[in-house]
Image 1: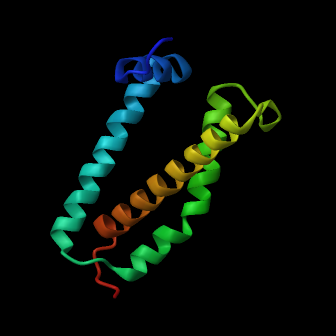
Image 2: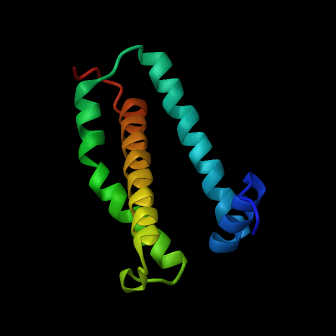
Length: 117
């Protein structure tokens, strides 16, 4: 591989997760992002109680994201081969933590409408 392009990344992710699962994850992520933007625009303020619950969910999101990727790639933590693997797992953990925090905040705002500030 001479150069890393967006198309190459998509092909790699489709190979890792399978085409259907990868695009399902993309659609779900887009829907959650749109719902989050809707909540931010609708409320015009951050609920700090909801934000706290979202922050507390972040470690769970990190662990679940790493577990999901290890499960899908049929790997284990014993397969970590070097610094790039550790960096990649940390990036996956950060993405999972942020993703679950956004999901928790959005779900709380959509379904627990009461203002709790």
